[in-house]
Image 1 (cartoon, rainbow, N blue to C red):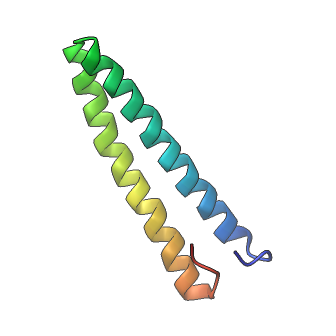
Image 2 (image 1 turned 90 degrees about the vertical axis):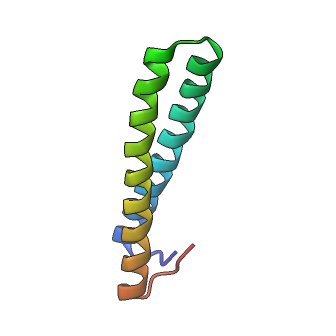
Length: 74
C-alpha cells in the first residue's frame, strides 16, 4: 500500500470489516443450522446475502481507487 494514501487504507479497512462480517455471519448461521433453528438460519441467510454485496462493493471500490490513483493493489 502507498503509505501516503489514506483513502486506500480506509478502503482496505472496509474490506477487512466486510470479510470479518462474513466470517461472523457464517459462523452464526452454522450454529443456527446445527441447532435446527430454522427462523434464525433464514434470517442469517438474508444477512449473508447483504454482506456478500457489501464485500463485493468494498473490494470493487478499493480496486478502482488503486487503478485510478496508482495505489498498490492487494
